[in-house]
Length: 230
Length: 90
Image (tube, rainbow over all chains, first blue to last red; front, side):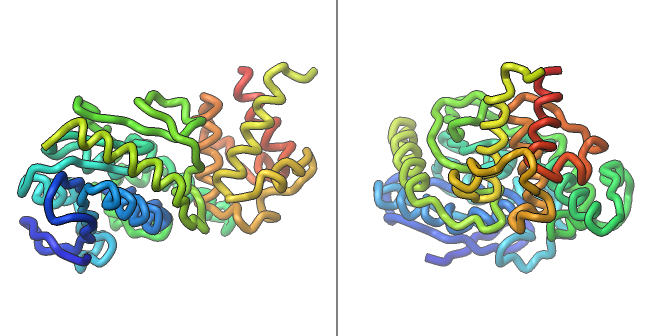
């Protein structure tokens, strides 16, 4: 179901899944191009979560998705404030994927559940690398130090991103203070509470979906939410 | 001399190419040292290059500097495995 939420900076769209009552999960999607690549997967995950009797909300962050605000005008604080406006309005659990953990991890919630969390530094490094690889093909070169200079938003992997947003993200780590459950893919050497088989869909240009992984993660998230309670 | 970790590194590079590019395991298993990558695999666009490098770093515990990334290291499967093997055993 399509809904919306209001925050200090305006009104943004969100999708809602699952029952009217019971526990609620608010999910922070991955950032930038990874959000597009994992959209179908994220929706499959939340539909599967609904089948476990857990409701969820998938907000568009300001400047992303259906947002009327251009990304060029967005700050990292906007994202956290907008997301917090939802989690503060009712008791809820936060789930976050990849770079979404940098937003969803830093707001009040009953509990946190992270899948494949990534540091802000790694998010910016990936974007910078993609730009450098693209520039090599055209014979130009991009200097990552540009991020630290003042100037217009920088075109990275299809988005014009404000430099202040890149700098703020780069300095952000996901807050994994308990109660927090971290799930990662098998083969990821970083520490986690649980590892699941699957491939990193967010890396693929033709991402498609992985219904089996969505089911596995939904079952894990539903179990975690029930253990943490309301 | 072939370092003893070479087969493991070789397998990791194949797994990363499968995962990032969405290649079948059969297709990646058929890669040999002379199989061309960058420019030959349509799946290997600039975002995918970033993904391959980052996944290799994470899974092998290596760091690849920006100025080390060039067309040569990504030209063939052999060039890429040789590059990361040299990094991994340093």
